Image 1 (spheres, chains in turn brown, purple):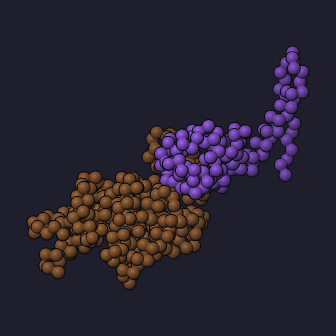
Image 2 (cartoon, rainbow over the protein chains, first blue to last red):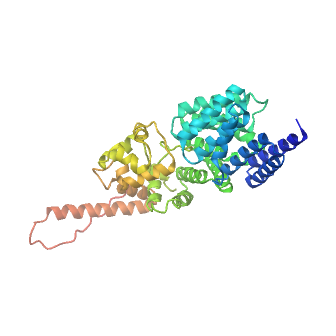
Image 3 (cartoon, rainbow over the protein chains, first blue to last red):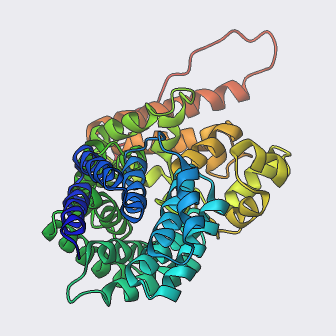
Length: 300
Length: 137
């Protein structure tokens, strides 16, 4: 590996660590530095790599100021290369973020097929994880569970300890089991995921495991535990600006306090949730009397 | 000791969504368009196979624009939910307050019975005198 490539690889690793920790601004700056260097060195391969990474950071930041056609160019330029697989994966993620699930599925499947051909275990695993998430969006829990299981097996095989990507897949798999009322199988998976993400400093990825642990404990009627995890999920959701996590946390906490008989606390969370729906003034009154636990999908 | 809210809660399930939709004379296609899901997904939802996010669930509640009693499946008795609330409120009262409420209810029942027994016309209104309440065991 050339010195230049070593330098950029270090930059890329540092940026990825920053992104996992939730410092997207720093990650973006580092990816943009790398992109600038690759361009100045006229290294097309590295330029494509950093274009993909930069786009991924922007997607994580809920920003739209990227050009999807650049990713398509990368796919077409060298369809059997690593960058093409990565570009397919990033395209799938971008379409998923826009709610364009059919397109997302097309690119994720393409990334998976090429990733398998090239023996790229991590990209194959993350593509499987994405395909599974797309199944979850449409409430196909059994199909999602099989895909998450396969994703976890591939990502687990990458190292001795569970990687961050594998931890995310483990959490998702755990959530599927919990949603399918196989809580005794799901709960250890999510706990394991949370511990690994915590140990690896992947703070921004700890919101869903916290939410899932809250959900499982509400189902188990362990309301003290549910409260603990719900408060944690809510804090992380607010910290990283994830409205879906915040809304689900408010709902689960309200249900928890309601079951505990702590009505004023329950009301506080129902009100916070209702504030997201100003055109539905009766919402809070509905929520006081109707439980949505049987029909809710935290990943929809 | 406050009564947990959960004792008053009902679970929204797929079959209830189906009943409510039919009560509103909506087809699956019409409702699915209003809430922004595919008709096939709504069909799965009504069969309990499809779970959705809060945004969609709240759209469903909003489309139905329900009275609370309807969710309890008490469309024939629209006041049933209110009655349930009344029982919960009663249970939260002190023993002494509960005794007073029982006395008042007994008085009102007696008053109603006397009104019913009175001649229909020309009878001046006479307030009923309540009997001494019995001790609550």
